[in-house]
Image 1: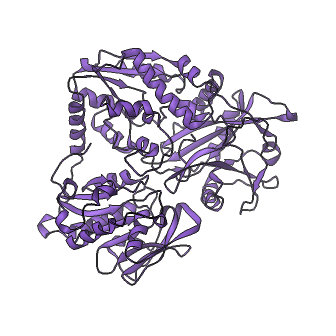
Image 2: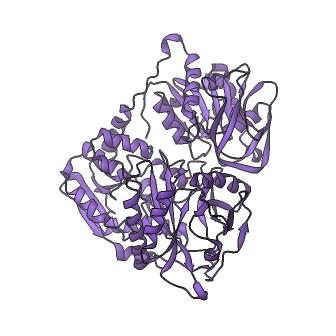
Image 3: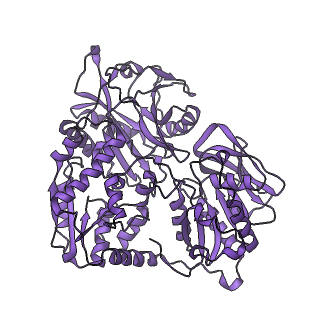
Length: 634
């Protein structure tokens, strides 16, 4: 869904990085239109005379995204001819992460494979002795977001190094006699200090190459709204719309947009109770839907059907795929969706599509979202699915919601996944689905802080490292018996980054502030299935935690995870003593996130409140950033 226009544009070559669309969003926010294309689309552009396609008209800059591949594994040699042709036309070029390495390699540099990966926050030192336009008004030391293994080891005399990381690796460079730049870090993510300013400086470089009377930033965000409404109209001409409404901001905004594009009598909002929602969720959603001036509101209680489909399922990818297909089957049972009278509207947003990967992009599958299963993809190929928000991020959806005068309580609700609590019940404790119960926690890890100990847990969760999916163990940190002092969440967060970089077998760090080694060694694994009893316990705990955290507006998302770990005092299972994890993060758009810095009083309140619920033995805290961990565990 692209808006045709005559605006200046910056082209983003998507090499499969998780943040390519985030780059596009940032550039548009800075009032320059951005367009994403696959590298294959530019391979035919070998000379300056070949700039005749839609995406090269009014081109003022090019950015190369990050990606999961390695330059050392090869690339298409023809890509250099495209960059050479850009240079003939004087168009500035910026490479980020993989793009940074590719440009360095193409123009005489050397790329090496690192011994230790860099994921998360890293401090870089800017060399202001050789002024570069990208670092104009940027401090000499800043924290940036890294996600890479390879690095630029050598640059020839065509280049100037403009910053180094603290471990002396090249963090950025520029070409001496041409506006070509490379950044090893990701300026587009909110966790890179001054990242938006660096991109703003690049836009200034791009505009400086244009005639003085044509340097105005001319992209208007309101055009985005107009283009979405037009997209709904043209995609649904002559059809009625079934709109899946979960109650989250994405589906509510999608419903509102459809009401602006279509007659209310053509709209059929459908809320499906999967049995996997938050406590009392369906009644709240139906209460909201009844306030709308839409006549055809539909409700389906499919909880028994979903429980049956998920019976005995423990693999996280299989869970997501089953739930996605069950949604389609539920819609069919209500509307006989296999005819051409209806189209189905989903509140899919961009992170859903990029983490699921696709045949059309180079991005790797991090996790299959329920709205990207095979049944949905088949319907998309048949033109039966409409996704008004598929190119937007959560923060952009919220901006749209405010513009459309949707209740702020709905707009600012914390995100909740489409598969619901099924992906917050970690069922299996091995990578191979080996269901031998009674595994102990026996893998100690040295922690470089006095008074802290660490154990690798015999369970696994999904992560994203170097733009690739990981499925690894979490590391649990806890105080030694002798340590009577309070250990802050901030210290644990700082430790998590270095520990994950140093230990390739982990992708999360958990914190057990109120448990000691004696208690932790009593814990044993047991398969944790999706059933009504387990869901009910998770709903109760989640509801209690959310009541406490509702006053903390700086938390972007919070989620409670049920682990297959139980207190086995005297080697007999006590069914009423299970371990749960609270993950609370700060974020803007879900593409990156930072673990929440819990004050001591809040940790204590949450722990005491959780242990009052029958069935809960202890509450741990997941303080890992994204990357390397995804926000959800599965």
